[in-house]
Amino acid sequence: MRIGMTVNAAAYDHDVEARTLLVQYLREACGLTGTKIGCDTSSCGACTVLVDGESVKSCTMLAAQADGASVTTIEGLARGDEWHPVQTAFHENHGLQCGYCTAGMVLASVSLLEEIPNPTERDVRLGLEGNLCRCTGYHNIVKSVLAAAEAMRGAK
Amino acid sequence: MIPAAFDYVRAGSAAEAVSLIGEHGEDAKFLAGGMSLLPLMKLRLATPSVLVDLGRVRDLSYVRDGGDHLAIGALTRHRDLETSDVLAQHCVVLQAVAAQVGDNQVRHRGTIGGSVAHGDPASDLPAALLALDATFVVQGPNGTRDLAASEFFRGFLETALSPDELLIEIRVRKTGATGFAYEKFNRRAQDWAIVGALAARVNGGTHVALVNMGGTPLRAVAVETALAQGASAADAAREAAVGTEPPADLNASPEYRAHLAQVLVRRALEAI
Image 1 (tube, helix red, strand yellow):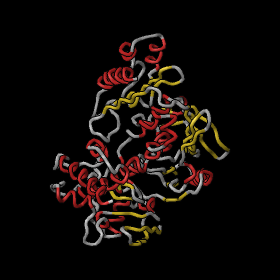
Image 2 (cartoon, rainbow over the protein chains, first blue to last red):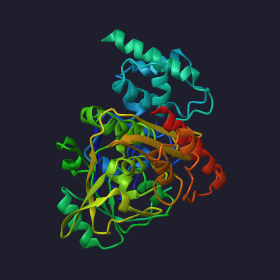
Image 3 (cartoon, rainbow over the protein chains, first blue to last red):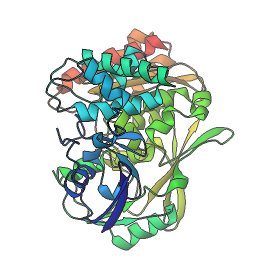
Image 4 (cartoon, rainbow over the protein chains, first blue to last red):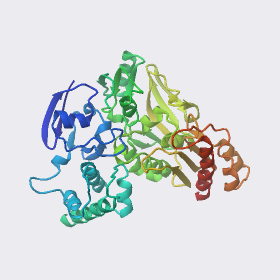
């Protein structure tokens, strides 16, 4: 079947099998390998991308379901050379170690801050419950998201 | 993991969805948010030959004040329940339970109707709707019919829906912000409940529902009866596992689940 979507502000369309998962489509058809496949069972959140601005697990969505949608992956978050405030905060607060969960963690955080611009630490921990990190123990991730929230409020 | 091949068709309305499922026969399945069906398909535990995608049936996403009840479109996402002003005013318990389903990503895709139609005894919303005496409106080739939640859940992943019927609306009574508590016990934040217990004051009585204590979501009838006869929360909660057949799995034995049910029901009753 023919599907098309906007990914990181660029238009893509391809012939795909109906069973193509969104994460496969992004990685293999669009060549955007920043989105990782972790558990492949919608537990770990490594494959999190934004579909029409909201976080979803792209291993548990058909590409066909995103037909016509606007998708943002980690590659599309920065504006040119300027990182998104969440990316900057993860960098400055050492919010990652091996980095495998980071793309998903960052996009889940962007979506969370869209819904809760002024989160408490508890809001952040609950809001990221769908994203697993096996390195950091989460402390610096939470610190990063709180720092990003502050930076984004300051910028408004 | 990739699902087995299937044909994909898209419905634009409930009527079209029902007609498409009729056309494609019993091996066709409706796809709502896909949060339960797609994982089953990836594991090849479900291999439908045709998926009828309901994602474009936008007019089944709503929460409306129906006067003496609330009407919730079957394709309303958990996220929309969480943020619904109508629920915040008239049925806080449903809002609170929706907020406990899965994680943010799951709640951005999953729908109340999908959760109900899937009929998983480990899911949060079916038990809550059972406690609230919900009515399910289903549409088939010959029109619509209403089904009481109490007669809807028939067995593990089995409901009273015929293969050619679509759940279109869920109706619940208004409970406002009256007392309720949902005790969901799990090891990882985003997981299904190992056991869950919901207690809510409904219509002058106390309703208690159990998650993952049998093949279907259950009402803790013995607890409700004990309470109606004046038993204390602690005494009534001892009846929580009566008549249940809790499953055994990696997380828990039936005996442990029976114990959990008593503890969680007591906590829920003491909180309301």
